[in-house]
Length: 350
Ligand code: ADP
Ligand code: MG
Image (cartoon, rainbow, N blue to C red):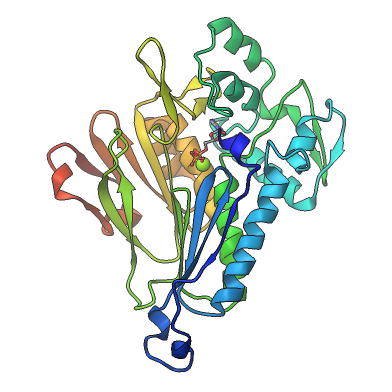
């Protein structure tokens, strides 16, 4: 569904919640007036809210960035770099510099995460129906056969010439929204914005603090299925990105729930004891790549990864046995909601 709809970028033209033109001079209210825009892209609603700077120009630039990125990496838009690469019969193909840079980043993360992040699972994801919404549980033989044609070692990048070997297809769905967030933040800054909140389909990215100087309060969703939130964290200038089994899933005829994040080793939904992985850090695309990866790794590997990683980030893992692991850098800014205090136990990781 995600990939199919991605092509229909319906732009819900700029919604100006700030209608007080008279406040444009030196009104003390100015800084609390917000403008926002909602864009449907990457099969999700993306809302960007800015609180200062040249708001109209900033939001227009944000919309342009989101649309431009989607035009590069969409797997369904026949004119995108990724679509053309995936349909080039394994011959070398010249993509834009930006696409090759993002592909290189994903390959780098594949190595760092020991294969947990794998952008070559597209053929497997399609068989499960996660790309179309026609869900089904493939047979063991089908999955095994499809796994033969996966693996990042089949991607070769020389400058901006990319070659896909062994019939692999790539999909940047695991990092695209984070990359979009980073690009939007860059253009917002260029337009004088110092306070902004991005909600890119559940990926939250913040620029600066709230206009009154206080921290943004970001809710952490209940990953066990409900619509509620288990906790809040308070941050400034950070991406807060969650991967969870509750985001896109179906129930099979066998009564099992199957979700859209696959373990590249098995070709099946990653079921390693983590219900959701939230990553907090400066770079949206890094947090996006890591949230998917940590979800796949499971608790022990995720904790080891956090301890050994050269990249600075914090994480919040909700486990299937009712624990919430919170790394020390965010621990003091983490508040579990009272309703969950008996169901969940918080542990600090240091
Ligand atoms: P979401 O896009 O739902 O916010 P993620 O950032 O975790 O969540 O990305 C999940 C998407 O990435 C899936 O929809 C699928 O397209 C793709 N994907 C699934 N498993 C993996 C994996 N192990 N590595 C990389 N991409 C994956
Ligand atoms: Mg991700």
